[in-house]
Length: 115
Length: 112
Image (tube, rainbow over all chains, first blue to last red):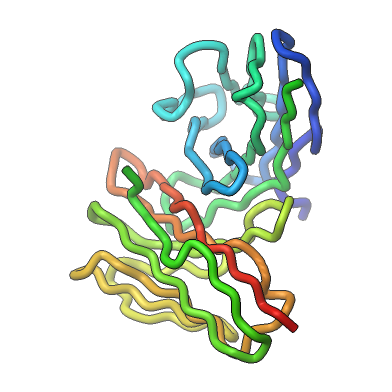
């Protein structure tokens, strides 16, 4: 049973370009969470999605950032017109349901570098 | 302000010694989890302790939870160089769903 998969593992973008980060949850998991981690810091919650629905996007910047989790395919975190401050590691986690009794399983992360 | 904050920020010990990390939080929680992150890697779930539990063990790990003090501790006994990593506590906050909030972490270095 494959774990949470994220790609790409590393992404380099120039300022103003778009970044697309993909997350495939574990088999049987329909809940996806995105977190951002700046160097030497903890994870900051960004958005929580269930298939085709955004449940909580309170941690996501209002502009340039969007997320989706379509019925088919991976969840996508999209950052438009990237700036240097977007450089960070972006982690995706998945769970079987929304209860904390169900542990969130993390992917290896995508490290975004904006030049 | 942080919901969960680990203490100390950094800890350096000799192999074989015990390592203790603490986590304090502010609001009521459903439960608390500890995660480990090796440098440049993803997070690995270590242990979950529910709000009605006081202590939990898993191998060389021992976690305590004191809801009256809003604090938890993670003890790693007989540490090994491979335990070198950052350790995060994550609290499940009571909202419309169990929202998980991470603390800033404790960086543990175990010197061989």
